[in-house]
Length: 341
Image (cartoon, rainbow, N blue to C red; front, side):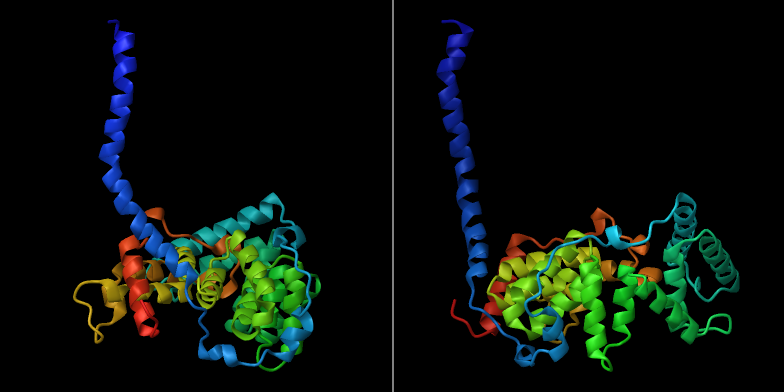
């Protein structure tokens, strides 16, 4: 019998042996996956805040709105190479300084930051001008009082700069909602992911008839890398009974720096050994606190939300719960909600 013939006769037996060896793993894997997927068919859930009446201005500008997912880069001024490089030098200097104790209070570092900012402004960077404006609104000085900074930001908004439209709108919250939502609507039409996340999240909590619109805005925002939008996407999934999807979304958001998502993921502390109701959840999830600390040391992004100032954690620091942990948490929450097993 030739070698080829032996191989041909033995091959079916080898395949059968491999299948039999793998079968226990396949059998054990499917039930866990199926149990997890079952939580995407849970009963819809409504928190108390869903009883809030929608804001009249929200309905005025977004009821019946035809939404198109756009990119704010298309509607923002272009920066030449010199301006972009000057801004990069400022951002890199502050990013390194964020991890240095006393960086923001040190006089020498302050002088260097101001020199780098001045260089970027002279190079014609509109992004540096935007940074300068939002900084001075929060920290006014004799050289640039808050009134002057606000006027300059308004000018950028009037020029149609998406992030300026968004940022200025947030200063109107609580005393001119109509103008706020008008500006947010303009910012969304010009591709602002920040505005999409803000309005989409408000729709999720206040206007369930507009959920399809809110969902589209939030998905557009995350497609442009805006991690904060994951929180409201997860809340919407939870409300609709897609509880597995909710935690998958919050997981992505937490690793991207979404603070509210990190808070949601802290529930995994209840699945850890030695946890008691008296235990601080943060003490049981040091990996999540490490992520939180990393993103808190990014002051320019917290101030401006300018994408150029955003830094993402290294992949090695990401938090990914096991399927077993996720299943245990979902089961526990089902009990807490008084639902049948």
